[in-house]
Image (cartoon, rainbow, N blue to C red; front, side, top):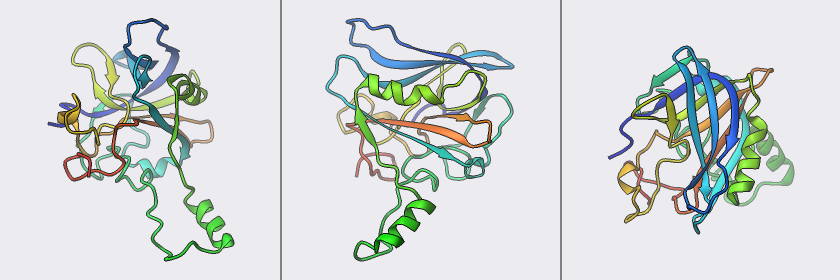
Length: 219
């Protein structure tokens, strides 16, 4: 079944820090502390395994808040979201502001001047692949203390916190995460800049498919 719970946390970023290096092979995280009226939330953003062949991929870009409606400026605190289009939920492959453009407007590659216009209107956002340290370094510049922050993912069963802040679909058959595959339940970290735009960090694991079916399973 998909994630038991899914939603967005809205608050103010207090600070962030990385996991301490060790030899235990645990999944590696960048930790965010987010202040809300209910208290301070602990948010664990997965950025790879320190002792695994599973690689991480990420994107960092900027969005206008209007494309995130109706969760562009939610009241502080945690909010459940329906795992469906239009609820404010995130889906890397289906959300209009996040999905890669299909590129099917032209049978052949368009002229250079046309391509430049297209790139300006809808810039390509390819995945970057690298180590957990490189992924951490890509995320950290947008983690400015005092910024409003939106964290999409699954709330902790106990205590104030969020996890599964990454793609939550496309895991292969036979993996321990197959049963959690689902659409419109992906995680994300977004911080609001002084100009009102959102800096966005998305991440996925190399084993997760880029194309999924209605159940969130690999096509």
